[in-house]
Image (cartoon, rainbow, N blue to C red; front, side):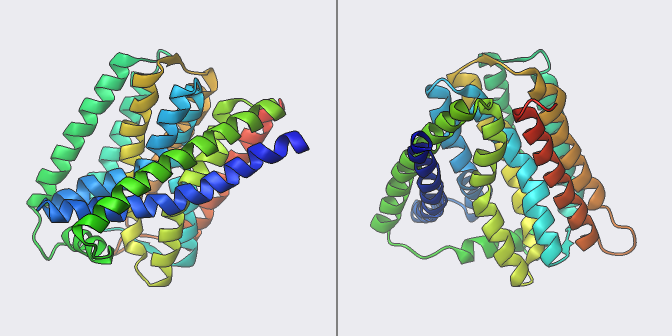
Length: 329
């Protein structure tokens, strides 16, 4: 057990620091952008979007550089599954999630289409430099489209109001303090991510569990904790309708930006289970979110019943991963 103590401490402490430093980084990045006179719309779409996926991106980069690209890939896919099954599922259990028409008509179909496109991109079982280039180009095009689409919104549109609300929630920082938060948060993010990756790899080796399974579970859930905390807080304030937009944005950045990191830094062959099970599960959860968001009568709402289904499916997926890690599948 002593050989497992240090990796466990590294993982737990690294996770706690990762969650804390990601908030510091986002506050610093947004504040710096405001002082640089960057459009609030760009801050809402790009800065906050990148910020919520920054833990996954840093973990993916360090895991890839440490020779563990499977951990990075598992983190990206697992985070998308956790955001829907865990974060959205638990939020709907606390309070019904009202789905705005613009999300239902634009963002959700876009997320499903991109997720399916990425699956087809890596269907050959390889994640290489060309794939990374396509993912980065797609990310730039998606961000440009989102900025253009949001520019056309009326200021009274719920989506525009959501961006304003998110910016109002950020603390007001001086220019120097904003830069300190930005750089300090990024440095702590990198240190904590390194701790998490090191601890996770050692734990995987100790239990002879595939690194990709650790990425799909411990790392994925850990890097989704900021979204979960924000979701629970929003649900308690009767603002659960803000959550699904954040989940869609986070998942778009995960599947494009986070997946691009191991593709560029450590091109590799994907494990068959990633294609045959995990990416299909991710597509299934994304499709379920779209179907559950469709209005049965009146307003589109993800209610507690659908929240139970999402949470139960997520628990079932975790059990499936347990069977894989123990050789029971």
